[in-house]
Amino acid sequence: MTVSHSDPILHSPAIQALGQFILARPQAWENGVPECEQFEQELHARIMAVECECLGAELKRYDVVAPEVEVGGTLYHEVLTSSETYLTVAGPVKVDRHLYRPAGCSSKSLCPLELRAGIIAGACTPRAARQAAFLTAHLTPGESKNAFDELGGMQPSRSHLERLPKVLSPHWEAHRLEWEAAIRAQETVPAAAAVLALSVDGVTPHLAVGAGVVPMKGGHDPAHRALPGKHASGPTGNREVGCGTVVLYDSDRVRLQTLRYGRMPESHKTSLQHQLQAETASILALRPTLVRVRLADLHLRCRQVWRERQLAPAG
Image 1 (cartoon, rainbow, N blue to C red):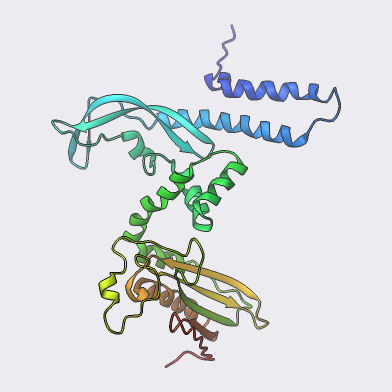
Image 2 (cartoon, rainbow, N blue to C red):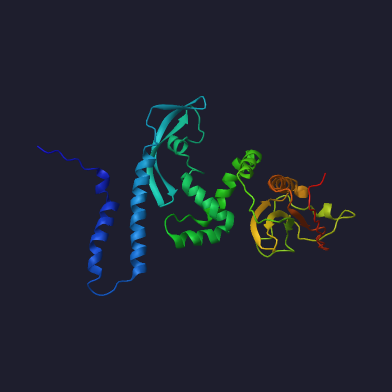
């Protein structure tokens, strides 16, 4: 007697649909040369559907079914089972999970699945959050959404892409110094580098369009700006965002590497200055003979640029 075992996943709707699509493909050639782009798009969509099914099954394994759970020394009792749709790299995945709440409390429910799987902002798998954060670090939320729509797979909304950095930022800031130090420890200096250029600037309504205007709650106080010695440039309620770069050039002035920094409005750009100083010191520790060029604004209305060239470290 022969006993055969069949994995249920092989009979899932998505895998069945993918198999039928591939098996039927030769028939498309019987009536001429089919469109390659359409096949590529349909194949990708079906493979993403299979990936969503696999991710859904995997996320379900992180769920906890018990009368009560203990988290951080607090007992939580099971209150209900509900479904939630999570954003994954392959697209939305709907999962049933159990929710828990402290006895006698009307506080927000706790979801062990989200804690164990590392769900970000109650919506994204870790990989999906990583990709969304990476793209929004280089593009605006609107441009990022367009990029995701074009690439296929997950399609986060613009509002979600705007919200995600605000959720991640406090966690980064809490460990920023140690994490930035760890990143700098992995950096290298190109062998051809000859010049290090350090620049600091600010983004204000006068110097940029659209994205340069940064309305802030508790912005400039009109009464404070009316004090002697305070110029009245810039609309009320807008503050300057700090930005800076550390750039390496070769001896022919070809740019080899650019490190960009940006900080929300802060008095005297203190955090930004510290970041740029630490980055510069890290690079010069590896290549102390780099010629240094410093660029910065001295005044909003009188933009003066100065350079300092030095062949050896000071002191």
